[in-house]
Length: 311
Image (cartoon, rainbow, N blue to C red; front, side, top):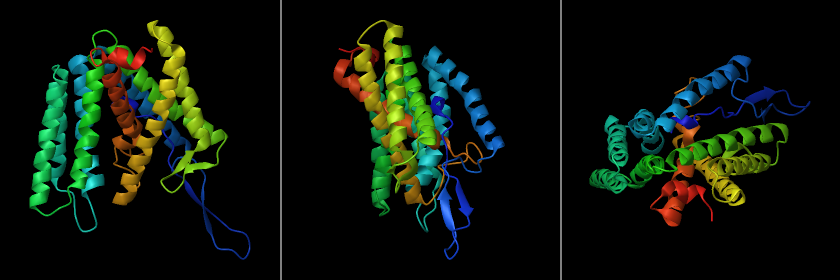
């Protein structure tokens, strides 16, 4: 999951003098916060350093891949707890993040051992316990319901897809490449084409041009992947990629909504000035769950083929 920590732009609010007789205005320039060359270099360098590690773990699979996901889980658990459990006058308790981390790690171990059903059951049991505790204390159960689902389901999905002995590696590489292509193409499309905004009240950076650019990038990855594995229809896998673009954007919007609810600009401080791990993998969370659901419906026996080989 940490593989999808890519360089995505943040909002740069620049104060500029308004015309005579008008007040100062705040303008969204569309560039990363700070917009300095050093910020851009840090963003690119961090992606360059992490990408080979992530791709290597995905290539090796098994416990190498599980270890990468375990590290991501420990970081994500803290950020998810911060976004969902914190509220005015209510601080995040260490046990909230600890419960999420334990559930995620247990799911990783069981799924890697070839027991995805048991992994989901363990996550469900942890969720049930968290709900019971919150109910006993008179606290809302909705945050726990969202938090455990948001963390556990994508982890099990990624490992289940990777564990396919025939096309698991190709499925994960397609999934990661699709998310990266969506982010990169959407960023440059928004930067060079710009407005109109897609959903300014939720995520001011997103534009319709970015959505179309992301779809084009995902479609191209679908065609390339189909030709690489030498099976299935390139056109149909391109259409699947376009559908994944919608999911990826929905994942970004959902995480943005969580941050607005929590009153924070970033999910964490993984990269100083550039946000947390959830800010980097919000789209991957949604795409991984969507791809696993598609595989479950299409070919549960061979999930790799379930997402890659059409018809």
